[in-house]
Amino acid sequence: MKSIKIGATSVLLLLAIFANASILQKGYNINGTFKGLADGTVLELIPSGTHDEEKAVASTVIKDTRFSFNGTVDGPRLFRIAVKGTYGGCQVMVYHTKISITANAAIAERNNNKFLDLKALKITGSPVHETYLEKVAYREMLNADHEAYNKRGEAITSQLWAAKKEKNQAKVDSLINTPAYKQLMAEEKAFFDKVGKVSTETIQAHKDSWWGAFLMLNAYSYFTPEQKPLFESLSDAAKDSYYGRKIKDELFPKGFLNQKAPVFEAASSAKKDADLSQLVKGHKYTLVDFWASWCGPCRKSIPGLRALYEEMNSKGLQIVSISIDKKESDWLKAEQEENLKWPSFLDKGTTSAAWKVRAIPAMFLLNEKGVVVAENLNLEQLKAKLKESI
Image: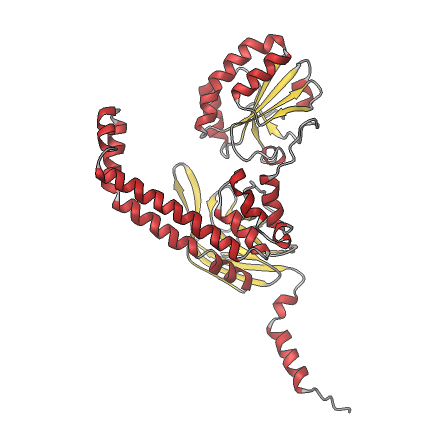
């Protein structure tokens, strides 16, 4: 028998490899235990960390409180694990390692919505998740500041809400001129100034890696042109990363002008699928309006759309409303309340994303061939455009 000699350096190298064996995996393995969920409960793995409404990439079923997800990713990705059809759950930064998740779980209902509540949550086996927690810890500090100044202003805030509820404008005017209210407003301004400063410093401290782009998405709910210089300050590597490309799509949208309208997957209250080719047929122009029951500006724009429809429908204008409501019941209630006179549909979850809708209301004008001839219009711009053409 031949003896095998291994040098000290080789031994250390082998030990390092075995100690980090999970890094060499070809994919991720998430194994979890959610005590409190019944057998058969469906869990979903949903991409998170961006401003897109993303669909689940995988689903699994609880059995004896246990579940698992397996797959591959191109790089570190943030996911949310939730019960299908609910909010809440937990977020986990995933890469190609073995990840263990344990928690005590319960389904709770708040504001007519169901949430997956997790207590004693523990996530291990994902070094990139631990790094993620460290990098977003500053938000906990900001949240504490937010709660603190709101608590100090509880008395004046309660009085103001009561006056508004009573529709007592004189009392409202009196309260907003008190030292207590002015102090609250000063603290609120100082807080948001701090949020901007701390968030920007955190992003720029990571500008040379994908973390910079990820943290920028994490810091803002939506982007405006004001954030373009911050994005441009990121390194090419950060801007070209997965999360960097997500930001670029929002800050520098290509749009669909003079192109065929994107995918149109939505259903009517009668469960009939929308057919864009039929909806534009016979109409000189078709206005596609994205809205939602909870969107105040959207609801306020409907009377103006109704007047426009009554004036110009006979001249060749069609309107198609697409709701992005999560709950069908919310959409149906709002649809009935608004008494829409034109075709109305509920997005199946892909349409608003395909049209790159970031804020609502969002309006697109199509010609009779289904080609986008104007986009992201407000009602006044739409009226002017139509009066030029019809």
